[in-house]
Image (spheres, rainbow, N blue to C red):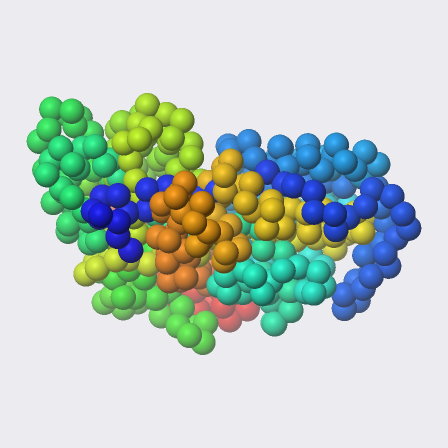
Length: 431
């Protein structure tokens, strides 16, 4: 998708949402007693909302909005670490002890199958959520074996952020669509006095969930897959090697700085905002935050580059799961509907650049005028490739991180790392 130049492509980024009361809940009254499967949503009173550390400020604002109108059903925000793997582990520990400390879980979209299969979250009543108004790939992340086990809250697609001012000054009118183009653009930009000392590109290559995402995007963008259509591992291929080599070679030739191996989302975002990077791979949330930095008005977003053309993003986002061991589930269900309403999604987009699940927001004229990148983001989400949707996701992502990191640091060749990963994934998916 293009504007007048490729450089203006996707100029805005995702948003996401301070909640607005939708009227689907009530602070008083008797228990609903509504059931979904074997679950009865009963009990009203205080609950907790559990998520990773919030850098946008949107989540506390939403919770405050709910609390002001539900004084007898207040939500306590429990913030977990920024690291996605640490978040997942703490949620699992809470579930394994059958603790009622956690009520509503802000789950990474890829965790749904694992949490549902282990009965850590309840099956939800589909008719109470506006699923038919949401992007289909987003809804699918909330299901397990055809049933709804989470409520789609936000989506996510990887975007390529770039410095429009520097590209323009270097005579470049379009954002790159391939890795080769990106490297060539970097070489031109780095000849400018203003770009002295800048690095070309960074993503998220520290050994955590972000590395799984970046590895998957590199492999998918080179025509490879991690698992095939039947869910069987198929990563020891020439296409996957090309994708992994793209990252490995970029570290070797300095396209990615050496310290890029330590970056998570926040470190890479900060590097871009501080003027250290020409290009950045990150999620839409970074768009609004960059607009509050010294590079405001000097950047835009485009689709990720691939080997021979536009690349493929990993499908991101978060869903709300209801802990099977929680109390006050009637309140929890109402809060989940409040949090995932289109009105809330509209606010999240405006205030925090969190990608909405609702289709209409991507084509709303006023929204597109304010956030020109929305059509690009919608394309990114619709073309995104899900990470392996497997029950033993923890074992799968751990294996990916281990072998990808070994290749990136030179501990193994790309070929050996992929062979070992293929064997590890076979064992993990056979469980």
